[in-house]
Amino acid sequence: MEKTLVKPEETALTTKAQTTFQDYGLENWTPEDIVIPVLRIVQPTSQWDAEAGTFFDAQTGEVFKEIEAIFVKSSWGRVKFKDDISEKGIDCKSTNRIFPTVDNPPAQECSKCEYSKWGENGEPPICKETLNNIIYLIPKEAQSPLDGIPYLFSVHGMNIKPLKMALSSLITRGKPIFSRVFKLTLELTKNEKGKFYVVKYTPDKWLSPEVVNEFAKISTSYSRETIDKSLEKAEEEWTERQETQNEPEEIEPVEVIEENQEEEFRQELIQKIRKEVKEKGLVKQAKQVLKTQFNKEKLDQLTLEELGKFSAVVLNQGWDNDI
Image (cartoon, rainbow, N blue to C red; front, side, top):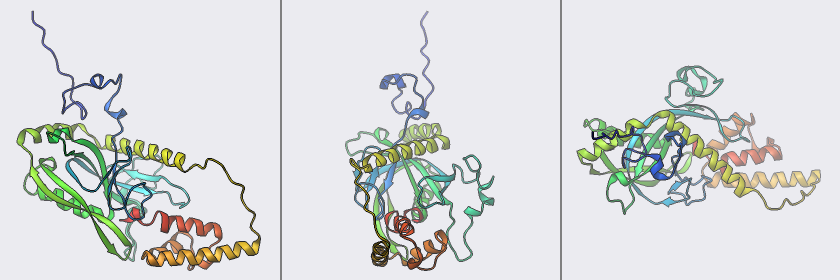
């Protein structure tokens, strides 16, 4: 009697090639074990080792001036970074913009949390909205869109509106978001916060019904939890990599600075920070940081240690979390 072969259950990584993890040399692996690479926008104040105005693969270090991609999955979220500016990391987050997904959150619902509210004078919420996406980046040598490389692509602030408009242009036509290829480029924009890059989405070719059906299967197999876990893993690995790279090979002895020398150095640092803040157009933001993070009105009121923290937020990290 002839045996009937039963196909294994399809997953995000098996659908397009109809393969299993064993075919890739992986034993006892599940989709949750795979870290999807993160594609980032390199802003002028970003700390990535890449040129501003490019897309950056934080896992491999690859840089792209422009890309062609298909949006496979898109979901809303929120993220609140730690209050202590000397620390890095996430304080609270949500994978659905409704309920927090951390232990001991500030509130049980995002809509009721004080950090999700806009300020009386129009200050943006401390907890930022994010639009997290899985895209398939199509290499030039790809023979089919299904040969694309999956990436996590998350946007927030000023970069949310252009993506909402691009995806809405498909939904209003009764088309799924994975029915068309988009060309993504970056345009330099300037406002009161300074200079930053915004993604421009140019519609390209439509996909055939057969390819759209394949992407529908891929889209269904990805969950918000999978996106969130992959983002967490990617952040952890990148942080470890940065800490290793920035670790000095040899620690030099710290020079003892006398009180008058310390004050002289503090004044020089104040002048340097003021000049750079003005050149980068960050005066308004700098005043806001002084008031909200340090409860001070002027730079002269900050200690040498506080000046270092202030510089790290305004000049080094900039306002990447707000744009």
